[in-house]
Length: 132
Ligand code: CO
Image (cartoon, rainbow, N blue to C red; front, side, top):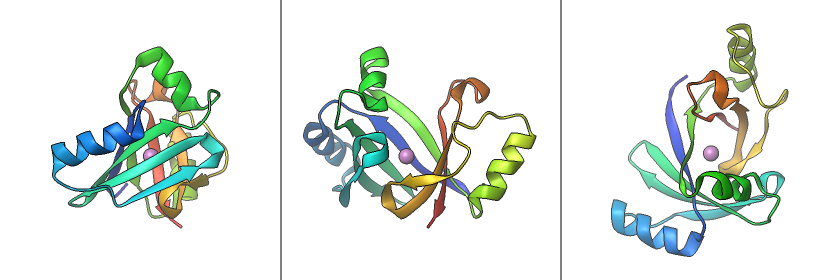
């Protein structure tokens, strides 16, 4: 893996959280993008080589809606940049990690993504991202 690509933060109110993170980090979000497959609206702020991804649910059956109900707002996942997502998925599976998907899917920011089960990663939801 190359670096931390972004950190995902689950939020209830995207407008309010954009304002909060703009104040906190001193940078404005550079884009919003809906990920229909996961029923989330994302907003990205760039900070040096990394990004912060704010995630809000667009529907009550969104994974983020369920997460917010259970745990409230907070850090949701860490995304690591990889060069070859399929090779990395095969490597991790061989190492005994549980992948939440068999094939990479289309994520925000024009990336191919794959999530790992947090039970196998010390409670942290890990996302692999490859530039598409
Ligand atoms: Co993400």
